[in-house]
Amino acid sequence: MASPSLPQLIPPPTQIDDTHKVYSVALACILLGIVASMFVLLRLGQRIHSRTFGNDDYAIIPALLLYIGWTAMAGAVNLNAGVGKPLWEITLGEYSVWFKGIIGSVWLYPAMTASIRISILLFYQRMFATSLNRAKFAIWLLLALQIVYLVVFSILPAFICKPLYKAFEPLEREMYMNDWYYYYTQVALYSVSMAFDVILLVMPLYPVFKLQMPMKRRIGVALMFMLGAAASIAAAYKLAIFVTQMQRFTAINPRWLQYQMSMLIPPQFDQYGTTFWIPSQVEPTVALIGASLPAIRHFMGTTAKQVFTSSSSKFKQSSGSTDRTDQSGSQRSRVRNLRRNSDSEVGLRSEYLELNSSTKAFAK
Image (cartoon, rainbow, N blue to C red; front, top):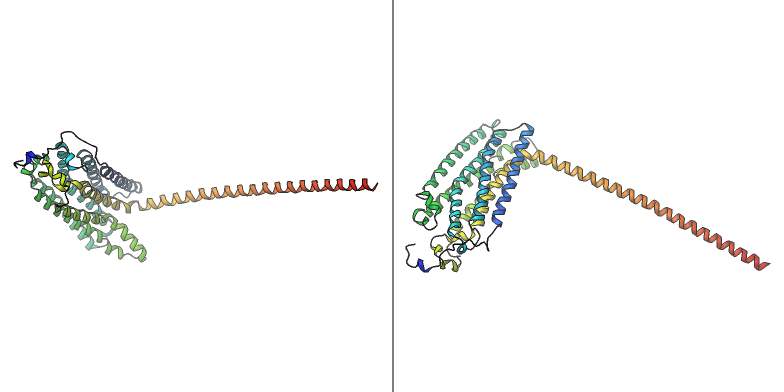
């Protein structure tokens, strides 16, 4: 605030105005969190029921807890930080919550993604390592690299801001926080995370295609295994949008430049909900659902079969009752027709008798 022109600009509001508050991003994050959590819990329940609980299932539990924490943070920040509102309507208190979410994400993201990948690697070890020595070595190497990844990217954020609590102060943050250091460390984090996801994506291909089964079935099994690592697609999108947004300085609403906070808040915050929180939620959601599908595949198949069988039986019962109704209706129609025919015959007979009587009388 040392600029002499800054006092001439419009100061930030002091009262929270939720007229233009956006709820869709928070609701989307919460909904995705509920769906993914249900898949993981279903996986754990299926493994317990079938008595096949393994190391990969133990590893998915901390991943699920970190994911739930991430979802709660995403929902709270988007609901209480003014994410999605015009930047000039956001108060200093809301910006403080906003920056707390940013700092929280730089530590929670590495721990969450590393936990998910460790679970996937332990699942690969469970399936392939006993028969393929190369796969066993590659899995242990990747497991060790996950620990290195977690340690390195848990240390680097500590140097983003000195002292760290100043990162939560919108008016003082600029003097203590290095935004470009944050940018480059995050690009490195997302790049390494995406590289690991790509490795996990292609890793099952070789052992699966060595299986003695029809090619069509091998392709299906490979796709099922690869779903757990399909988060690499979401990670690639997240990295691309993050880099693109950080270099966006021209597409800015001119009105924003009339306010003091335009000197202190990155202009890219105007789309932060859809460019950061949504991709950041989709990535672990896809990973957790994909990692859970192999375990619940049999359960889903059995449930689908039961539903289909139940629907078919109900349809047959309905068809049978309809046929019986049609048959009874046909019988009633035949009875009515017979009655009509009988009445007609009676009428004809009476007319015939009357005609004969008249003829006889005339003859006399």
